[in-house]
Length: 259
Image (cartoon, rainbow, N blue to C red; front, side):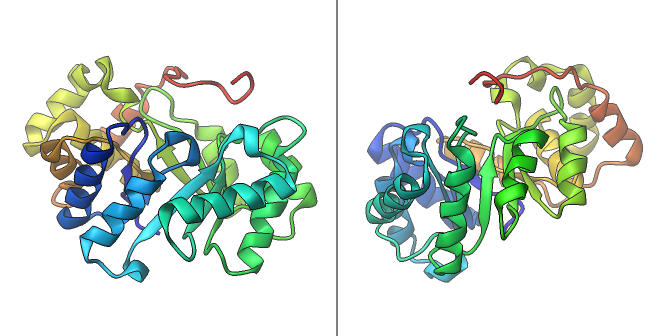
């Protein structure tokens, strides 16, 4: 699984979506993260075909929405996603949120998709430790990925440590805290000046050096290019600690306990 990919949440204009994803793949992105509820799986599939990149060189993720959860419902939802994407398989399929009374059975269906080789990787999204433990109790194959909100204002260290101990890769959604005031934090700006990088690039680098998978989203070609241009510098231990110190346990999205 590529360590840096493109998130396509809130890409709602069909033409703009296809152009953004096509540009990202041309720029070097090889992972695209969509979901049924985003309403752009069809456009994601179109961009994949337009890119000219062999399917096996791309890593495509989608998610089952809350109203489609449960064992049989998830299998049907997956089939619908594949049809919209016009793909034969997905690289990763996730439970979008831990819907009470359904999320364990939803994951059991994801296991079946893995056994049938319709997906290459199993996973969940927005699962706290206690959600994961409930999944573990019934799972034959533990989730390989947990996609959760992570950024310097919400570092999620206990959850990340639990995932590391259980061989679960963590993907950061909203990795830039939705581009709010965090990008103007003087600590990040000063680090960026040192390396000739933007605050957004510094944050993405922090994710990568924190052993996280990161999926920043943008429809702007310049920002798409900027977000992937982070391989030519490395943050020092002191800089990493300084960014870790920005944690406020502050969410920009919903809490999985009360979504």
